[in-house]
Length: 348
Image 1 (cartoon, one colour):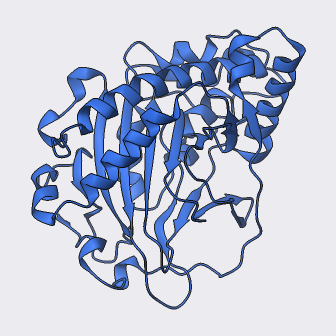
Image 2: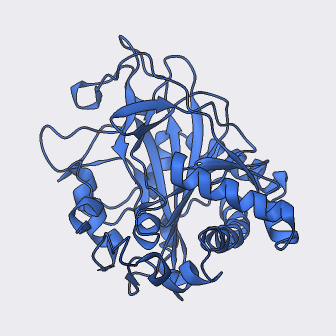
């Protein structure tokens, strides 16, 4: 096992990085959901309308955006998070990736360690493996006993403080969205939170996306879905890079920029909703001129919990579509590196 050369150290993609998509894709608009209305006026006609938008966004589009914070492949607006913590998070992330290589490598994941935590990129498991064109820092944020603090940057010196403050705010937002998802499907508010469990995992991924020279656009992150229940995606610059697969066609999403948060259902949300809310395959296309920073926060159910279609979503007309699973993430990453989807193997 080895680790690939980081994209920040080379000027053009090597053979293992190159996978050219076609140059032109249709644009897919992102629905907007006002979570502030859902939170402060849950019984109002306005909240009922927002729940309908949320259900449409996750059933038809597979994502939504929150005002001032894009959540779930649909725009989430009025998310209740001050802009300043997110500004600080972008700032410390940028300062980390601007450090000299020898400083960043102090936080590299140990060679041969299959755990994700630490700085680096894809582990090279096979000679012809397709690699992602970015530098990455993975950190476990929650539960506290899962944090590998020796891999948490203390340069910048405020990195840890800012990250923990944002984690607490985003985790509350995650709970609000899970409740809204249940309500939109006429389920009891805590239906999905109960499956989420007492010791859910919160994993962060910080990405430095480098300009990529070459003929035509290059895929900088290979097609994948997420192993989470929900994923929050944040990006510092309005650079169009996100693409999603619907049916057999790829679509572009409009440029997502701070302070927006894009929220996407992951594979475990698809299982819990019995396929009503889809975990879409998505990828990122590198820009030939502009560098950008992005951050993904993955909200993952307790690995000891059984994840299965909610009881209220299974009946004679719509039987259970997925077999129950425990520790979905444990099975996900080995298959993901090979380009496979675990969720497909769970379909009945």
